[in-house]
Length: 138
Image 1 (cartoon, rainbow, N blue to C red):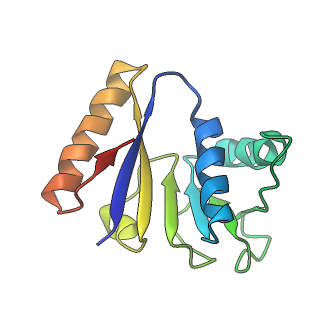
Image 2 (cartoon, rainbow, N blue to C red):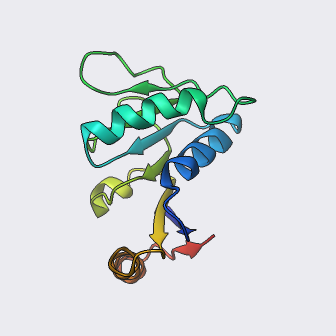
Image 3 (spheres, rainbow, N blue to C red):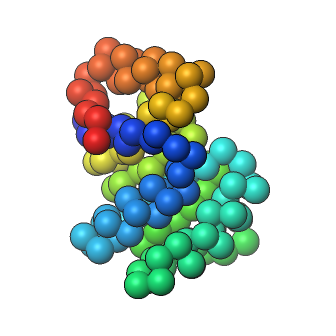
């Protein structure tokens, strides 16, 4: 069963945290999949990953159907598919339980700066518990 970790966001800095988590797990030798909600966010994150930290190099690819992503250590996608067989999932947008269960480690976000988003995260946290995931908060 997948391990689920929530990351608390007190400010709208999700892209920065997506990059930090991806970089940390890339450096540990893991393949990472980042799923975001739409093509605009995917393209924006793709560009941000090249410049987010001047001391970091985060090799990645945008899975837009035109590039082969099978060998990329970090893949950004808007779809629930895992072309590189990643073991780490970072959810910029919620994914289905069936998809989450395909990964060893999944990151979700508790966006506490917005009450609606915070309540949605609480609901997901409770659902993960019911499903037996034992989510944790970072």
